[in-house]
Image 1 (cartoon, rainbow, N blue to C red):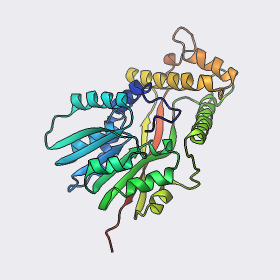
Image 2: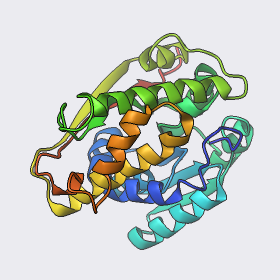
Image 3: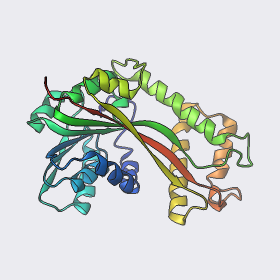
Length: 292
């Protein structure tokens, strides 16, 4: 998305690549439900490492998937990911460097015709005027076309409420700090406007009907396999490191996290058998009605 946001997408490239690989099953599950047999043109806005672009391509019989991002570094990672996992000439995946929504006209020209499916995951909330962005994307749809927003759900949980160090509720406070960071990020965006209603209402205000929501539960109970445990530890380490300079975590909690994430410490989370992964991710879907 826009490089004017406080988020440095270039620095997040390794994380985006990891997410595209780890979420492959989730992407395929969602794409299987979204892609119709007659779909020939789809666009993935804020594509990251193109995990969903690949999943959509796998579900299409033929046509184009246009993967859009504003960061050349992110698109380079997406190119490598696509090259390693896609070779079917019947569906072409195109990478386009466009800053949405500022360059919406360039995106419309690139697409050239009405779109069957618009996908945007955790992207619109990085735009100052979220309703205007949803409406602009809805205007790209052909009659009967669908727009899917992967926004919201429940934050991923990994730890028991009491880990035995510091005050109970450590991970709850981590989520709260991230939520405060999110509010700060939104307030600092250019032309930031509040959207005091949910994503389904935003889709309706963009002229789409019907509008539905599908929430998918992702659960990996304890004890985790070694690979999944490493994934959890890496994710927690990144989040704590990211929030550390913001001042949103207390010194007491930071001290606990330092011990829990230090492999040399006897309380290292990697020694525990009660780590788990639990999240619920929502996809909001709106359909452009046929003209009267």
